[in-house]
Length: 430
Image (cartoon, rainbow, N blue to C red; front, side, top):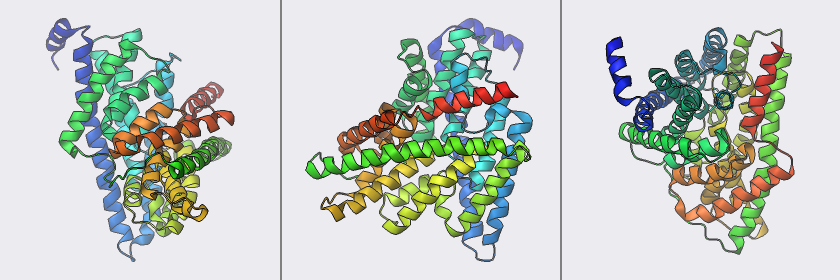
């Protein structure tokens, strides 16, 4: 772009947070649409090409290994800050720990995330999406020569708008920034984040359709005795298992650190090989899990298989995440919560409490996320927006609160804060 044009743009709208937020929303919206669409197309094509043909099924481990290898090479050779989720790195940027959000990270995160998640590694697209949105905010900040707090609010707005576009959840995207990224209410950050989230979500709806993230038939779950009793059980289970899942992630990260004879760029390939071999037998655990959750909440998976998928996903996600491949744990966490909720609701009739397991699948998503990330408000709003299920809002709130209390009693710190601290310590050792 001609420097005189850039100078004119700066002169006309410099310092206008509204215009900056609008621009961030537009960039992030199209970026997330391209990212999600690319991952969905790649993942579906690979699954169709391999799993639907017995003669090609053994190609799957080779593809996932190659996907992990490409992701590892891109991350560790070109932009190490793009490893893993991306949310911890954005948190460090906003906490002013000397971190920089480079424009290069947008391209590396996009293609590294596409290679890892698209090939089938058990990772979520929301973490990379947040870093892509933060990169869009940094890009707009460079255009307007924003520094200090002005730059931070643009990065935060980009991160929130990415969540909004990814899950078609503009309210949750805004709350996520306040509750998870900055841990306080700030009107100066709230306003641009809201604007960017609305714009990005509107673009995603226009390009991908105005549907909830999960297309399910949501039924009501009134707060009667049976519902409250099962909510209590599910809240405790989600709290305990959510903390165990988070600790498994941290343990797996340490194990990968001890494997110092394997180059960092090769570790995602190892994770790819593992998930590929498992995927030949149990393809439901591959990828982000959104299609599997949708199938579950439509009542298409039996209880025995639900239990198997939950157990395998519980362990294979930390294996993939700890490798350093570009991918997050947000969607896999929601998937685990959905399966736990469905199991709890489906098995509750054995103790004389018959409830709708589909409704409790949605309730479980909020509870498990609340325990793992310690963000109950974001969890409640996000599941409500993702499912369009206002009829279950009261049990969702109750169960998420119980899960958060249980996690607090187990002295569990928010997973993204812990990962950020762990990342900071590892970098100081280098």
